[in-house]
Amino acid sequence: MHWKEKWHYKGYILRENLKCLSIIKDVQIGTRRVDFLVEQVVSVELKALVIIEDVHLAQAINYLEAYNLEIGMLINFGAKSLQFKRLINPKFNSNQINRNNHINQKF
Image (cartoon, rainbow, N blue to C red; front, side):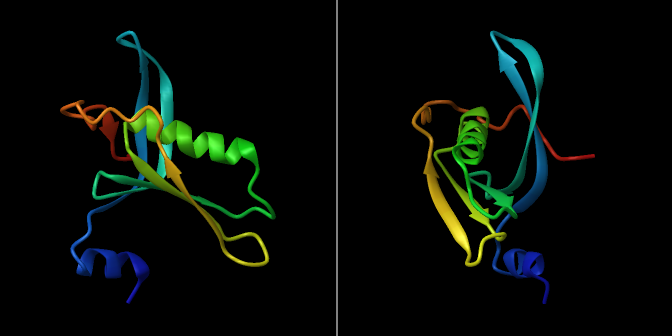
């Protein structure tokens, strides 16, 4: 069974390559893409690098802020052994009612 099928089999909602509009003061200034969004709650960013650098952590945290998600994972398959970081969004707003209203699935 493919790993994506396992997620769906267990009842998880897994969306890939989601596009999120970057909006500042009601003006769209661009878009961002997250590798995976699990249950509309956890972002998962995948890398294949020799080492994870601060810029990669910043990118993953930026996705959390853009999607208003509380937690995320940064997973690196490129090092000698698997590397992963659990990420926390310091700007998470639990009072925001519909945090996914500007997230679209990749065409």
